[in-house]
Image (cartoon, rainbow, N blue to C red; front, side, top):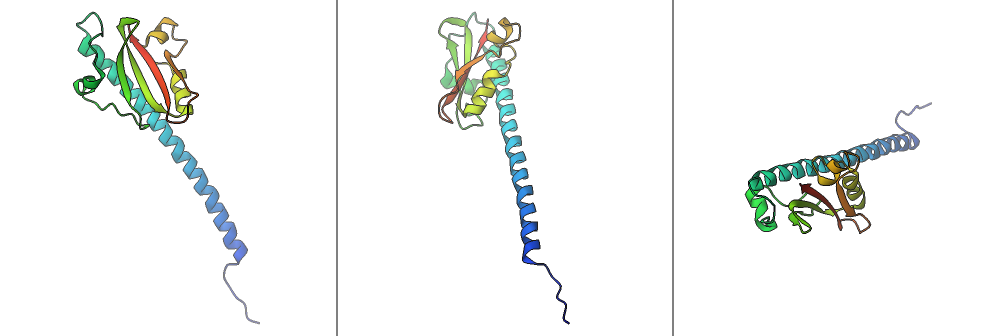
Amino acid sequence: MKQESGRSMIEMMGVLAIMGVITVGAIAAISSAMRLQKRNTVNDEVLQMVTQVRNLFGEYDDYSNINNATIFGAIGMSNKNPYGGMYEISVNPSNTRQFIVSINGLSQSDCEYFITKGWEGSIGYEMSGRTQSGASGNCNNANGQNIVQIIYGE
Protein backbone atom coordinates (compact mmCIF):
# COMPACT_ATOMS: atom_id res chain seq x y z
CA MET A 1 0.00 0.00 0.00
CA LYS A 2 1.10 3.44 -0.78
CA GLN A 3 0.94 6.00 2.09
CA GLU A 4 0.59 9.63 1.35
CA SER A 5 1.77 12.38 3.63
CA GLY A 6 0.58 15.93 3.64
CA ARG A 7 -2.15 18.15 4.95
CA SER A 8 -5.79 17.60 4.40
CA MET A 9 -8.13 20.37 3.40
CA ILE A 10 -9.79 20.26 6.84
CA GLU A 11 -6.44 20.84 8.58
CA MET A 12 -5.69 23.81 6.33
CA MET A 13 -9.12 25.33 6.99
CA GLY A 14 -8.52 24.97 10.74
CA VAL A 15 -5.19 26.77 10.48
CA LEU A 16 -6.75 29.55 8.42
CA ALA A 17 -9.58 29.95 10.93
CA ILE A 18 -7.12 30.27 13.81
CA MET A 19 -5.08 32.83 11.86
CA GLY A 20 -8.28 34.78 11.14
CA VAL A 21 -9.19 34.95 14.83
CA ILE A 22 -5.68 36.13 15.73
CA THR A 23 -5.81 38.78 12.98
CA VAL A 24 -9.17 40.13 14.15
CA GLY A 25 -7.81 40.40 17.70
CA ALA A 26 -4.72 42.22 16.47
CA ILE A 27 -6.79 44.68 14.44
CA ALA A 28 -8.99 45.43 17.47
CA ALA A 29 -5.92 46.02 19.66
CA ILE A 30 -4.33 48.32 17.08
CA SER A 31 -7.59 50.25 16.68
CA SER A 32 -7.87 50.73 20.44
CA ALA A 33 -4.25 51.88 20.68
CA MET A 34 -4.77 54.39 17.87
CA ARG A 35 -7.92 55.79 19.56
CA LEU A 36 -6.02 56.16 22.84
CA GLN A 37 -3.13 57.88 21.06
CA LYS A 38 -5.47 60.42 19.43
CA ARG A 39 -7.14 61.17 22.76
CA ASN A 40 -3.78 61.64 24.48
CA THR A 41 -2.61 63.92 21.67
CA VAL A 42 -5.72 66.11 21.99
CA ASN A 43 -5.25 66.30 25.76
CA ASP A 44 -1.60 67.32 25.38
CA GLU A 45 -2.35 69.87 22.65
CA VAL A 46 -5.21 71.48 24.62
CA LEU A 47 -2.96 71.82 27.67
CA GLN A 48 -0.23 73.34 25.49
CA MET A 49 -2.71 75.81 23.94
CA VAL A 50 -4.06 76.86 27.35
CA THR A 51 -0.57 77.38 28.74
CA GLN A 52 0.53 79.41 25.71
CA VAL A 53 -2.60 81.58 25.65
CA ARG A 54 -2.22 82.30 29.37
CA ASN A 55 1.43 83.23 28.81
CA LEU A 56 0.60 85.51 25.88
CA PHE A 57 -2.27 87.27 27.59
CA GLY A 58 -1.01 87.11 31.17
CA GLU A 59 -0.25 90.80 31.35
CA TYR A 60 -3.72 91.81 30.17
CA ASP A 61 -6.88 91.97 32.26
CA ASP A 62 -8.88 89.91 29.78
CA TYR A 63 -8.75 87.78 26.64
CA SER A 64 -10.79 90.11 24.42
CA ASN A 65 -7.89 90.43 21.94
CA ILE A 66 -7.85 86.73 21.08
CA ASN A 67 -8.02 86.31 17.33
CA ASN A 68 -8.32 82.67 16.26
CA ALA A 69 -6.81 83.45 12.86
CA THR A 70 -3.47 84.55 14.33
CA ILE A 71 -3.32 82.90 17.75
CA PHE A 72 -2.04 79.57 16.47
CA GLY A 73 0.84 81.25 14.66
CA ALA A 74 1.67 83.15 17.83
CA ILE A 75 1.70 80.02 19.99
CA GLY A 76 3.56 78.04 17.32
CA MET A 77 1.21 75.16 16.66
CA SER A 78 -1.32 73.99 14.09
CA ASN A 79 -5.05 74.37 14.61
CA LYS A 80 -5.72 70.91 13.13
CA ASN A 81 -6.57 68.13 15.53
CA PRO A 82 -5.90 64.38 15.11
CA TYR A 83 -9.56 63.75 14.17
CA GLY A 84 -9.33 65.85 11.02
CA GLY A 85 -11.20 68.74 12.63
CA MET A 86 -9.94 72.02 13.99
CA TYR A 87 -9.18 73.60 17.31
CA GLU A 88 -10.62 77.04 17.88
CA ILE A 89 -9.74 79.52 20.61
CA SER A 90 -12.12 82.39 21.27
CA VAL A 91 -13.05 84.84 24.01
CA ASN A 92 -16.07 83.90 26.10
CA PRO A 93 -18.75 86.39 24.97
CA SER A 94 -20.32 86.48 28.45
CA ASN A 95 -17.01 87.05 30.29
CA THR A 96 -13.92 88.51 28.59
CA ARG A 97 -11.74 87.19 31.42
CA GLN A 98 -12.35 83.68 30.05
CA PHE A 99 -11.51 81.97 26.78
CA ILE A 100 -13.02 78.91 25.11
CA VAL A 101 -11.11 76.05 23.51
CA SER A 102 -13.26 74.17 21.00
CA ILE A 103 -12.44 70.75 19.56
CA ASN A 104 -14.29 70.17 16.26
CA GLY A 105 -14.72 67.12 14.06
CA LEU A 106 -15.26 64.47 16.72
CA SER A 107 -17.06 61.16 16.50
CA GLN A 108 -19.87 60.52 18.96
CA SER A 109 -17.78 58.25 21.20
CA ASP A 110 -14.81 60.62 21.27
CA CYS A 111 -17.11 63.59 21.94
CA GLU A 112 -18.63 61.72 24.89
CA TYR A 113 -15.15 60.88 26.18
CA PHE A 114 -13.97 64.50 26.07
CA ILE A 115 -17.17 65.79 27.71
CA THR A 116 -16.77 63.41 30.64
CA LYS A 117 -12.98 63.83 30.97
CA GLY A 118 -11.83 66.09 33.82
CA TRP A 119 -10.12 69.11 32.21
CA GLU A 120 -7.61 70.31 34.78
CA GLY A 121 -7.70 74.10 35.16
CA SER A 122 -11.00 74.62 33.35
CA ILE A 123 -13.63 76.82 34.96
CA GLY A 124 -16.27 74.10 35.35
CA TYR A 125 -13.82 71.53 36.70
CA GLU A 126 -12.31 73.82 39.33
CA MET A 127 -15.61 75.40 40.41
CA SER A 128 -17.24 71.99 40.88
CA GLY A 129 -14.53 70.92 43.29
CA ARG A 130 -13.11 68.69 40.55
CA THR A 131 -16.26 66.58 40.35
CA GLN A 132 -17.48 67.70 36.91
CA SER A 133 -15.50 67.61 33.68
CA GLY A 134 -15.49 71.30 32.82
CA ALA A 135 -16.41 70.58 29.18
CA SER A 136 -19.68 70.97 27.32
CA GLY A 137 -21.03 70.01 23.94
CA ASN A 138 -23.61 68.01 22.05
CA CYS A 139 -22.56 64.54 20.95
CA ASN A 140 -25.73 63.64 19.03
CA ASN A 141 -24.53 64.80 15.61
CA ALA A 142 -23.15 62.53 12.92
CA ASN A 143 -19.58 61.29 13.30
CA GLY A 144 -17.14 64.07 12.49
CA GLN A 145 -19.70 66.78 13.28
CA ASN A 146 -19.48 66.94 17.08
CA ILE A 147 -17.89 69.79 19.04
CA VAL A 148 -16.61 69.98 22.63
CA GLN A 149 -15.99 73.32 24.32
CA ILE A 150 -13.86 73.92 27.42
CA ILE A 151 -13.82 77.28 29.20
CA TYR A 152 -10.63 78.54 30.88
CA GLY A 153 -9.80 81.76 32.70
CA GLU A 154 -11.05 83.42 35.85
